[in-house]
Length: 85
Image (tube, rainbow, N blue to C red; front, side, top):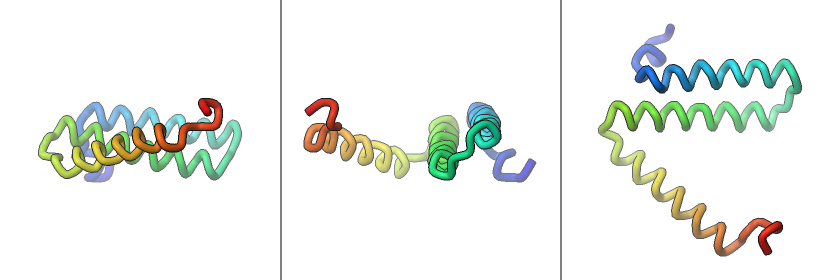
């Protein structure tokens, strides 16, 4: 394994492997470039987030996640999805 993967925590490695298996399966069954890119980005964020939580020392990342949550919460009130209007 590359050094980057070896340096990940065990839960982050588990998430990475299972997500990559899902990506390969999804690509073989029904290919969609949009879904592939979205899945790969979400996998990268999930693995980084999990590793950061396990390893600690990630206060900057915690602020980024908190800020994104606040933006999402505000947008859900200001511009709710059409089903809720």
